[in-house]
Structure formats: C-alpha cells, structure tokens
Image (cartoon, rainbow, N blue to C red; front, side, top):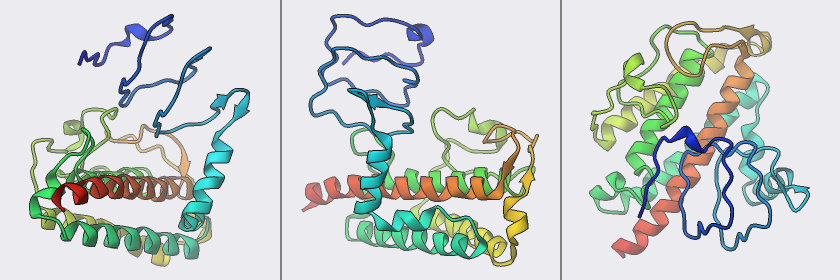
Length: 249
C-alpha cells in the first residue's frame, strides 16, 4: 500500500477522476474540503467534525442527537456546575472501569495489541492521562510542568518530549492505571471545593511549554474537553476489544 505521510503539498489541491476506494485517512486535516460527484459507499468516519454538509444537509446535529439517544450518559458529560462536574467524573470512571474489567478477561498481551493500526488499550489509557494533564493541569490549573512522562499525546501535538513526555516509555497496565487514578483523584479534589465563580472565570493563558496552545479559557470549557475525549476513547477501546474478543475466542 502506498503511504503519503506529512506532505502538506496537498493543501488546496484538486483530485479529479481518481479512485480512493479502500483508502485510509488518519489524522488528516480535511477542513474546508469540497467533494462533488463522489461515490461514498460503506465509508467509516470518526473525528472532530463541525459544519459538514452532505447533499445540502448539515449532518452533525443529527449525528449528535442520535449519539445521545444511543448513549444517554453523554447528556451527563456536558457539565457546567461543580455538582454536575463531579457527576461527569463518576460517569467516565464507570465507563473505564467496565472497559478495563472487560479487557481483564483476555490474555494479558491483549491490552498492548493494536487493532487496525489504532492505539492499543494501554496506549489509549496513557492518552487519557495526557488529556487530563493538558486540559486540567496545564489549561485549568496553569501548572508549569503538569505532564506525566508516560502520557501519550495525539500525533498532531507538538513533540511531547518538549514538555517531559518519554515516548520510549513502556509502562505496565498496572503502572498506567495507578498514574491515571492519581490524575482522577487530583481532579476530584479540585472539583470537591471549586466554586461556580471559579469554574466560569476566564484564566490563562498558560505560557509554559505544553498543550493546548496558550489561550484564555474557562475551567468549564477545559473540563468539558476532558469528559468528551474520555467518552470518545472508551468507545474506541470497546470497539477494538470486540475484535480482540473474537480473535481470542
């Protein structure tokens, strides 16, 4: 299979009378893309999507409504108050607890296995550590060095080594879960005493090297990113566990 990796030459390009059947697009920026007369049968898309129109209809409001119907817990993951923030933490922890328990029924090696070139469960859990460090430790608490070395940033993020992440790290599942538990406990401590005024206060930017980029944000917006990301990645993890369960059956 031909691979095109990190080639910005395609920005603004036109693709005409080509077949991309079976192609894979991973961490590709398609913002502003225009597709006319395309054939799109049995495609599978996931990602950050907003303003997408298909045959003249904006589809994301429809998709979001259907996801809420299929996964009613999502309604609890858009918190705006201290109480609903605490509830949202409970939701994501319940989801991850069930997912890790599901994985425990498989051979130990399964949690380190990639499915279809996606992150393994271990890598996904490490990414959730990074997300809490980024959007709570860095963007909300404005800490100068919030990143744990075993966190896994998204591929489009600045080189994690710049802010203390060891990309060669290979922690065990128990080590990953212990660090993640520390991060969630830290977040719970903050939410146990935070006021509505503090959640709504615009803070920042954090000028220390890290992620997300420096900007003024409220804690509400930052923490909502954590809950949204945690929910999405637990879905990815369960999707891949279903495949592994079939392989090990």
